Length: 408
Image 1 (cartoon, rainbow, N blue to C red):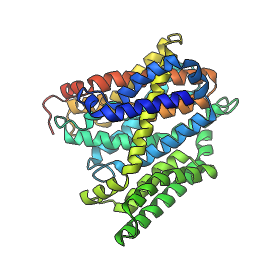
Image 2: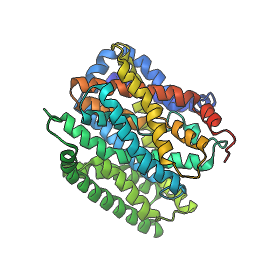
Image 3: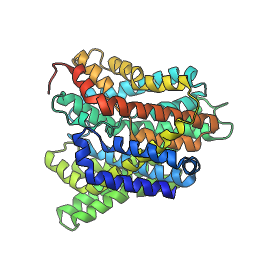
Image 4: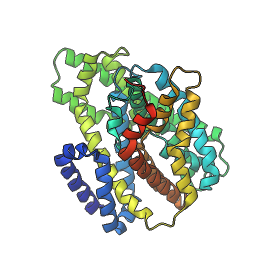
């Protein structure tokens, strides 16, 4: 993987130097990395096939996801629910669970594998990430409430899906797993891991948040010192949780929530957010760098699909996950609400897939057995590549048309 890593580094440097120009052409960093990655994937295909399925690749993906979850948990602006409590709660507590159920029911006949494997696939295709279409969250012609709700949902949904993903993946990864397991068995087996994750995440994140609040009030800590600490906190939390058998992803996500509360409190002011934003800038830059690397790797993985026989049921499942399996749960979640139908449609459509899906998909590919691993990789590629085209290239125009006259 050394050659592929060097190619990724060169591509990221090139994007860093001309990224603003590319944005003026509506080409995000994610789209640029995918395009370059596809070319590199065809050239380095033999190295890619062996390099992806290694323990090192798996650990790198896990650390990247832990960092992303920590940053996402802190970055939501306007308090914990971005000032859009009703919309965000409906999306997270109704639409997301319903989407998982729908995806599992639809995926069982289409993917032809076990229920736990299908749950893993559902966790791969459902998380939102606006990296392919960042302009959707910045477009002033779209309703402000809609943009804030989507930003909060994308910040939290991968953290909510992480324990379900880890639990289902643990079941399907074990030899002979899934044959005699029931959902209650899996939940019972995962409870200790979730408990340790909550304990370490809340403990470490909350303690560091209070400590940073205390030392900054006394001007003991240099600002760059706090920024360095913010990079290390999710890694320490992840490592501690995993060391005792906990879920490192959940721990990192909870650490971000606990840090945010301890540092600023539930009633977050613009001044508090600006301070936390500065302190998080190094971790945010590192998360963006890691995200660009994963998008390059994803582009390289796309090349593998071109040499794989077409599986139409798998493609159909991926396309449904981008459309019906997202939009119907959103409609159900907003029954009886005052949100206009056109805005509900826009909320259902404006749901790009990205880095979290890539990391979940690669972890599933590494952990699952051959047939299921191939399905996971195939579904991942079709879903995210479809989102790059649908949301990355046409997302803003379609969303504006869907919203119609509803304005911010």
